[in-house]
Length: 423
Ligand code: ASP
Image (cartoon, rainbow, N blue to C red):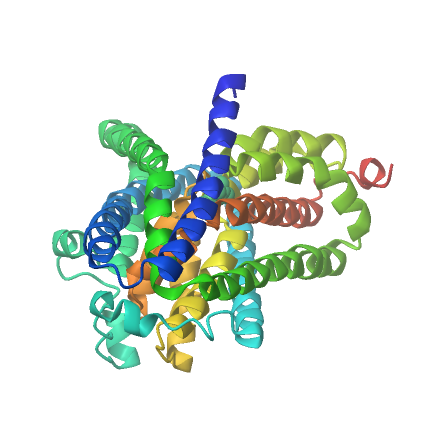
């Protein structure tokens, strides 16, 4: 990555964070001094802030269907390509899915314990924006609905689960037919590039969007709104730490008998790189190199598992999404049933597959997790301002998960040189 590009990215991170602080200050001041001034309320809060904030949310929503569709088709096509790796491929995908489900469960557990959204009453403020509660369906129907009767209808209606299934099938077929369908494969790859570029463009507007969303929220709720947001951050960070230092290290020790502390020490620079760039994709080369040079993992395994993980395995992202679900449900006073939690585990796992390894995409796919349990997508506005910091932290966990799974699979496949690891 060129130096200027890096600067730009960090610049955006800082700007968004500053926009959050400025929005919080501006909103709190308006709440304190201009709550009864009709002009300020009508023109500024419910005019400019509302339109710009909601406009930004709509732009994010606009990205979801094409982004997830293209990125899943490409992801599935990449998996199909690796037929030669057969057993290793299946095992890796299995590990990725299990660690993601564990991650969401940790997140839901921590969030249910800390209750980050309690005390923040958004139900009054944005009742009009709240989506209608999802009609309750039987489990059998929920399962059946994953199969689209009409895939184009599913795309047009933004029904994520059927879209995901359809995309996965197309990807697998593209991989199977190889050269015969090269044109279509290229089409989806380029579609993916276009959507990534569009995401970047939308993210450039994030400082304005965040400022307006947070200003409006704080002008309606006052500084009290900060407390639950702080609790939300603590929840996400705590769950990330538990996943990284607890779940991963237990798995590593159980499956390989390697020293977890040594693993963390050797892998720390890669985590630092992921943290500062918030981009799993950019971390792939460094991760493969570190795994080979310091841990003794053969490239035969890592050159497949690490890029695959950076595409489909986002444990940190799904942790953020799990906590966000509990936070927003509590803030909007929406009760979630045990079936809802299971839906969240399933959709957040799929969202993790559909989340590309670049900054902020986890926030886009969060819309589909919210949708699946009838939470208002507007709730994303609440957490957007602080998301950049969490994005950095969760990216570090995302790539650590890939590395842990890679090391385990390499160990089982006789592709791990313990002498190098122990050095
Ligand atoms: N930034 C994350 C990554 O690159 C994705 C996300 O959660 O937005 O892994």
